[in-house]
Amino acid sequence: MKITTCLFCAALGLLAAGAVAAPDVQWKLKYTEDFNGRALNTRLWQRISPSPHPPPWQRYLSTREDLARVEKGVLQLRGIVNEDKSGDPRDYLCGGIWTKDRLAVKYGKIEAKVRFEDQQGAWPAFWLLPQKSVRGWPLDGEIDIFERLNAEKQVWQTIHTGFSQKNPGAEPARFRTASIKPGWNVYALEWSPDKIVWKVNGATTHTYPRVANTADQWPFTEPMFIILDMQLGGDWAGAVDAATLPVTMEVDWLKIYVGKIGTRQVTELTRPGK
Image 1 (tube, helix red, strand yellow):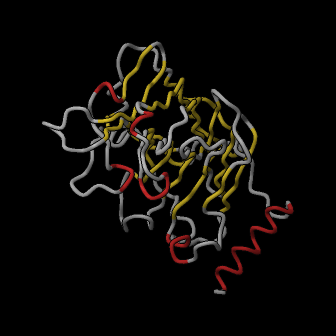
Image 2: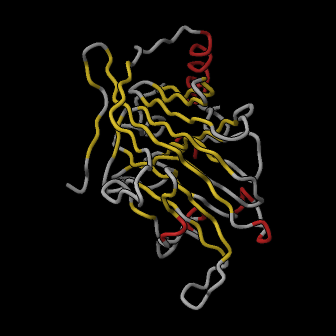
């Protein structure tokens, strides 16, 4: 085992034992997206379209308005069978939105109230990617507030880094919560200069500490944008059961908090497009 891996695991043990204590961050609500309008707020959100050579999560994403729509105070992100292939040959279509080029957050708290439908092949997610990519994925980092597969009663909370790519299993890069209750749940991420903490309904479920001042272990020093999307299929979620579609993830609200350590402001909110 590499020395860096040993150091990382030792630090995790100290953290679990309470011997490593980062300063507490005091969070203050800055922004609430309640989805109470009649349409998506395009000053903040864009619908996600697939890239020319999409990764699995973008395979079926479409900018069709009915796939990412606001209705009765709730954001609905849908996955459907593509019934008309005359303009789009893909078997399925999904909706997703992001704040890319509109709002990016560095060291903040982000939470959303979400509920799922249970369908084979459904893969809804709430996550962050860096606004500016320097070294490429996963070296620039990714934070998954949750990913949910099919009809599982748990969600997955994950980070991707250069260290996790080189040392799979050597760090808590992927964690599955014990359970989630049926219906609405609040999923939160508290990202500070020293650690990343995941919460479900206010209870801490997972912590990823900053152990080394290296870009491989802690690339999370740049602003990141927010993604909410419905995905279908792929190697992880498995085959889609077309007979059970459509499937929907609903988001009641999303909140962003800014943080202070003592009198020092740690959160940065940026508007890259301005």
